[in-house]
Length: 391
Image (tube, rainbow, N blue to C red; front, side, top):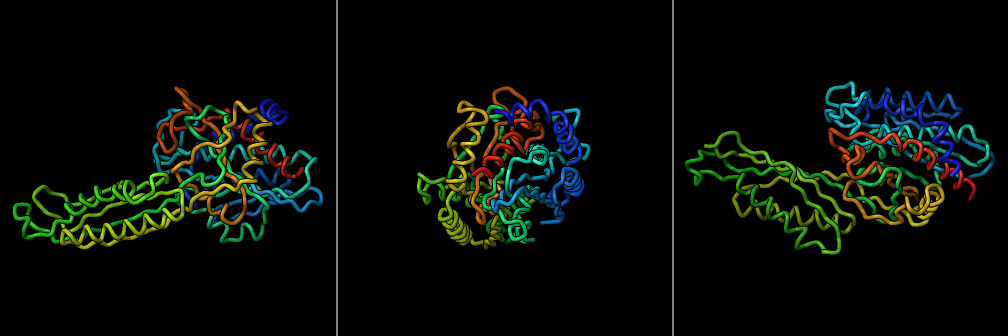
């Protein structure tokens, strides 16, 4: 518990203010210039070697102690979202239409607090790579950083990341071995028909009726094609067609989100969606154009690294504040791509539950990161790093 005590007494104020400063100045994917420069300057001031520009605006801080060949990677994300903030907080976003609605400001602050603490300690032996990643929110910043040589320039034996979770008591840790977060694919479907007068539908080929049938038919893929013991989501989030009540449009466009926790299910969903949409369209005498955009992979936590991370939390906060193997989530996370290259684990820290402000779900205009987590989260990173280098 020494790490947590030190964090509570020594580092909370400075990094709460830093977190709120980042919150006031949100930046979208690959536009995190101010944030990345702030991160780089802090790391350099504490003695880290700093590499800027990986993946565009990514930053890596490197600190080596002793002669050990052990190499650890800890990752935090930095980007914000295109959402108008409605928290009313003193540190509310100063940029209209942009806010830190997922807590990446807090993730950055937690890792920076741990970075400072570890820089002032000499009792560890190895190479610490602190990865501050851009563009997690759909931009694939992890892929861009790896394409720029993240793990060839800064090899890691294991890599870890942490995300806050509303609905879980503040400071409570949640771990999961194996598939922990879903893959995400995005599908645009254009239904091409023949427009006409709404009073004479027999002289047209109505893409809107076909689209409506396709929306309903898609739901049978999860209920009738996917094993009931597996997880799958097919969501039609948008359907656009027409502008007038007496005009049959020539085009209807649909936008889908497709998710799964298993690569085989992911392939099945693609096969069935493409076949079903084409068949439904043909039955209505219209044509379907399907644009399939692969998104993030299934995030798979490796067993040994997850158990190691779990043991660190048990020692830090005790078993009453640790969920040993929580449920999988159908949200997606591009840390999955890092875990395809390096063993590691992605863990959660509770942001608050019940009626607390921290219980507001992420990607909501009323969300805010719980500053009480800065001490606990940074203490966890410090404890994990020292335990890793002691093995």
